[in-house]
Image (cartoon, rainbow, N blue to C red; front, side, top):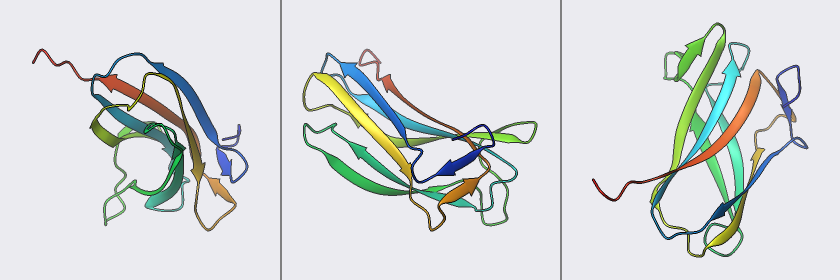
Length: 127
């Protein structure tokens, strides 16, 4: 995304991270957008190596209900919406992993997308 909250095809998000155990993780993608975002959803292409091989998925992330009410937490004219990509996921190997997220809509430029954030939460097995 650029400073004007426009996400273009050539402006992708990428993260590299290290996993050194075989515990299960919840994997999240968080999208922050403004009231200017013109659609109720967004299509994303997600490329990762979580299973020791390169994997590509296309994900449809719904950002509002059928009445146009935005999901997520509102702060001013910005909405932050976390989406669970994988629940209780176990990485197949220890070491460095990567994820690349691209906007995959019919438009080269999407207005109103402020940030994309990726995070993993280790699931506590003591529960």
